Length: 319
Picture 1 (cartoon, rainbow, N blue to C red):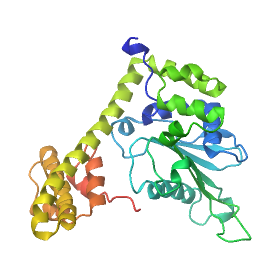
Picture 2: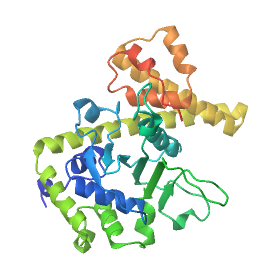
Picture 3: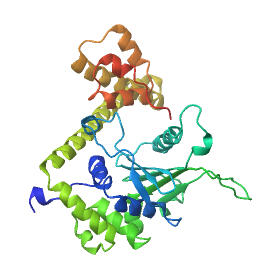
């Protein structure tokens, strides 16, 4: 099979968005499958169909798909391949922001509609004892004790853990055909796919994959993620080395934690110096006083930051 015949990976967030923004029927089916055994919805509009060059080259804006259903509910759909311990907080932050953005100052709260988050994860998120048998998760605002009551307007979060589903081999045919599609679209298991919407998604993906420009854009997006992974990995290794040295005097656990933080700050200083030139003492002090989350956030923004001042003025999103 030639390179041009290989389909682009639908887990690439650029490819994912290109695939679903124009096919509302496919997006509707995917959302309903991920949400599980609840009343089906119908997507009627994608609210952010455009993909800008800035989005491809960096992560100033998450490459999600924000849509609206026939009842006016906002649906935020995203695929994520890299695990983060704070991912649930991140997912909740995005749907909460979408909820708040529905109305302006002075407008009536009666215009608010539910916001539904749909997150496809290529990593295991829930690891408590007993979680290994569940791969579909749906969270709603509800009372903890009987009588059970739910609010009419909801913040709903859905997570689908692809690795668990690949092991469990349980669930409906539509669910597993989508899992096959996202897990290995070029693999032999795709020959077993019969769900109509997944078969149509394959045809759309073939059309996208046949375009040289689409392939370049997908590769650019993949390169961005590889660069960020390399930056974080290098910072971790350097931090661990320093932590072991400090651990001899301060205790291994405390030393490694402190060393990891210093390692992240050190690699960030190196990268900033390479891009913006020598750093002032004030800037160095700001970096070394920052939290691990802030250092990670700045590292993610380096590739697209226009100036050092703009970068350092950009705080990490709240958890």
